[in-house]
Length: 93
Image 1 (spheres, rainbow, N blue to C red):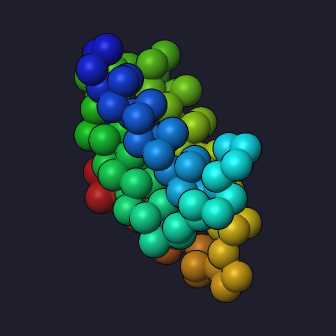
Image 2 (cartoon, helix red, strand yellow):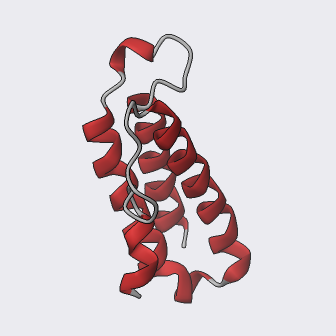
């Protein structure tokens, strides 16, 4: 459980950096890399959720949702609904 949480946190932090959400990281913004990191995070959360249970999975899903929203806001041309990073993960369960 701790290992999954640590890796999820690492993915969230890396995605936030690539989205330019931290102070002094605006110049590091790279939406292509952010997309990959968010997709990986969504896959990890969805694969681990049954073992984690709702209590532990809910905060991870909240963090994922926040990153997805920030990604959508950072895009000049948003992805169609349901096609943003990690959005298709729920259909794959």
